[in-house]
Image (tube, one colour):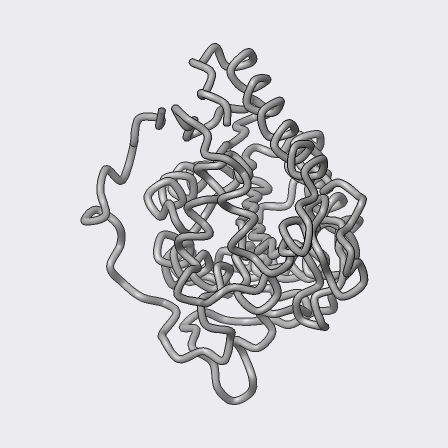
Length: 315
């Protein structure tokens, strides 16, 4: 089940203008880069990006950048604080008529899960609480990808990282609900595999003033361990297995923009990635795989009950 489209009904309706050119130094198949490109196409060119230290830092290596937008680099813990400073400066220029409304910029924080879930959460919490009018895009590759793929608060249960080679025993922090608890006007999850869903959400959020928060699954060939040619397939399986739900919260009210009719087995998603290889060989970790599947099933059972939707056929 997909929600009714309001702005973009097909790929032909999506904006064609490009604000992020090919040839960046980022890894081939990076889901975060594709998501930023898609989001930027909807936002347009009047954007200043506040980048937290992380993988995306490589997008602007002076004097070269594939971006047509402006760029400010911050520490991993302070992109939302940087966004506050930029927004305040822009508002002062507007109030003093030293800048026209046509020249005003949208402030977009770009941060990985290390910053979003951990180091930068305090500043982001404060920015949301103050009602800062800004955009926030987290490219979640489920580890500290820029420094060797160490365990982060976004690493899923059972996944191997540089600091948890036998598989993490922690569960992933629910940053969507943490954001939603702050009562911002808009929160959403997105995926580069579903560009129309992504564009719809960005376009819908453009009508709102205040914090607009997006959580994107950033498939990571380098850290997750798969051929870059499989990036879109991995992203598709994350949705079809129910591991990555597509949803939004408008003024706190949650709805899922896509509910699968049938959930594919989570194993189909896991077995293609080196970070889960230890669950399949040299011996099968049956109990762990069963637990992961059960958690996905429980989630979608609760979704069906809460939204009055038909429950997906469970794997």
